[in-house]
Length: 464
Image 1 (spheres, rainbow, N blue to C red):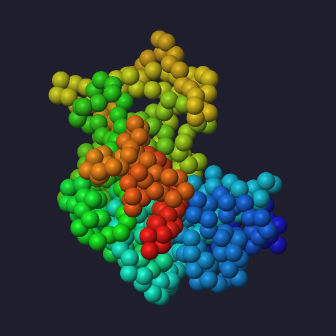
Image 2 (tube, rainbow, N blue to C red):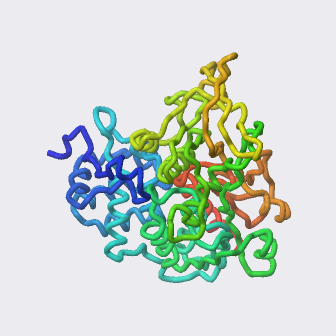
Image 3 (tube, helix red, strand yellow):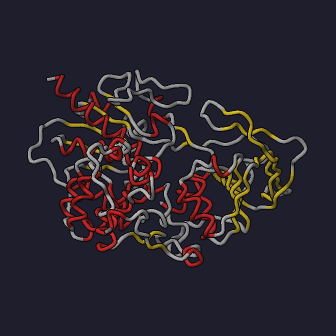
C-alpha cells in the first residue's frame, strides 16, 4: 500500500545533457496518477508539524487528503485560503527545510513530497480555469501596496479577500518582482506560471499600476494625504547588489547577479528574437553559494559558457537549496569550494582575464553558527575567466525610505518593522519581505505579506 512506502514517488525531469542547452523547465512535475499515489503516503498526523513549518500555514494534511481522493479543485481552494502563489511556491520554496523538513515520514524514509503536490494542484487548477474565491462584499477602504513581488502580491491578495480596495504600484513594466527578474525560466516559467498567478491575484479585485516609482513618481506621504489611501504596505524587495571591494571589480565583464539575471529573465537576453543581448564569455566565474548564485551559474551555462562557482566555505555550508546544487552539478557546473577571490585580473583594455584566488579553511563558528572561513597563507593561485558574476547578496534601495518622513531604517538600510504585524515607525505604513529582512526566500516574503495584511486589517478596524 502506498501509505507504507518509505520512498517518495519520483518526479520526472529533463535529461541533464538536454536541459543544459535550453531554458525549458527542468522539473516536469507529477501527473494525476503520480500525485494521488504520493498523497497516499501522508499519515495525516493529528499534530501536523508540517503546517507549523510553512511560513504561510497552509493546511497541508487537509489539501493532501483531497488530492488522495482525487478532488483537486477542493485541494486548490484549501491551499488558496493561505497562499496566493501556490504554483510558484511549489517550484521554488525550500520545502526541505520547512514543511517537508518537519514531516514525520522523513524520520524513517523520505518525507512526503509536499512541494511537488502543491505544484501539481496549482497547475491542475490553472489548466482547468479554477480561480481563488474573491470577497463577496467590498468594505470601501483603500490600501496601497508598493511592489508586486511575493510579499506585495500576498498582502494585496489577502486584503482583497477581506474586502479591501487594493492597488499595487510596481516600478517595472511587468508585475511579479523578483519572480520575473530574478528566477530563471528553467526554474519558474514566466508566462505560463508567474503571470497566471498574477492574474489570479487580479481576479480578486486587485489593481496593478506598473511603471510607478514610489519616491519619484509619487511618495508614500502623497498616497496617504492626497490620494485617499488609508494604509500602505511596502514590499519593494532588496534589489541593490553588494560587491567585495576588491581590485578589478569595475572592469568590463563583471556583473552583479542581479543585473545578469534581470537582463536574461525580464529582458529575455537568452532569446534570439529579443533585441536585448548580454555578453557572456567562454569561462564564467560566479562568486557566491546561494540560490541566486546557482541561478546565475546555470543561466551562464545555458548561454554556452564553462562555469565555475567560487565559494569560500565547503559544500556542507552552501546556502543554496540541495536540489539546485544537485541540478547544477548534473548539468556540469564546476564547484571551486573553499576558495575566495582576492583580485579580478584585467588586460590593458580593462577586459577580464581571470581572478587571483586564495584557498580557505574552516575555523571556529561565527555568529550565524557556520564555521568561519580563514585564508591559508601562501595558497594563492590564478584561474582564467573572461566574465565574473558577483552573487553576494542584496540590500534595499534607499529611495523609498529617504523620501518618506518618519520611516525608520537600520544600519543596513532595511526598513524597521514589527515581525508580527509589519507595522513601521510611521502610522499607517507597514512593510515586509526583503525590504525589511534583506534578501531572503519567496515564501518568507509571502509570510511577511500575510502578517502585514492582518496588521493592516486590525489597524483599519481600530480607526473606525
